[in-house]
Amino acid sequence: MLNLRKKILVAIDGSPQSDKAAEEAVRLAAGNKSQFKSHIYAMLVLPNSPTSTYTDFVPSAPVTETEQWDELRRRIFYVIEKSASEHDIPLEMIVEYGEPAEKLIEFARREHIDVIAIGSSGKGFIQRRLKGSVSHRVASSAPCSVYIVRG
Image 1 (cartoon, rainbow, N blue to C red):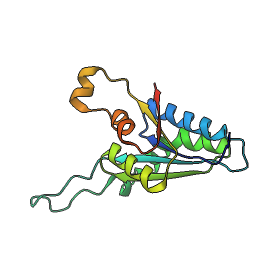
Image 2: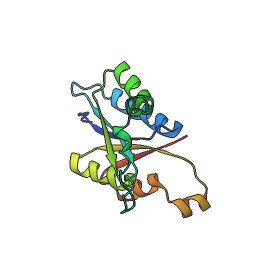
Image 3: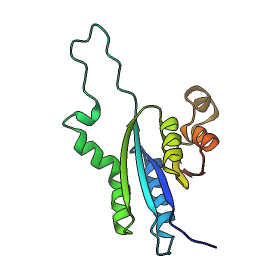
Image 4: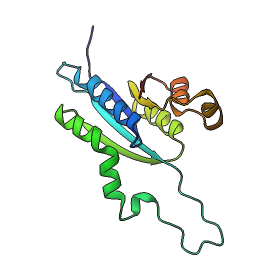
């Protein structure tokens, strides 16, 4: 079996499930013992910034432009940064705005990702029906393999 470099996309949101997916993504990358190192892309997808209306004189700044962003970013990406550096895995952190499933799939297509690692919240049937499941939408539409990590 040919063991070449893999491009791994992991969905990050700061939850315990995404931290577990991050650890699994690093484990997948570290398991590749060939001379070609796997590369991990950690993507945080934030909701679209609220649209301003004519009553808004000063629209609020996106979260990435606030004073608290650096600390928030450190906390959200902490597990993946620590784990990737311990295993000497190249890591690129990406922050996007929009709908998470759409952004993950779009990035996977554009960058020719080999596998997406994503945490599952384990929502019940009713919650999935009401809110939808990002992991389900990604798994059913992704152009590559999807590794769903249960919390």
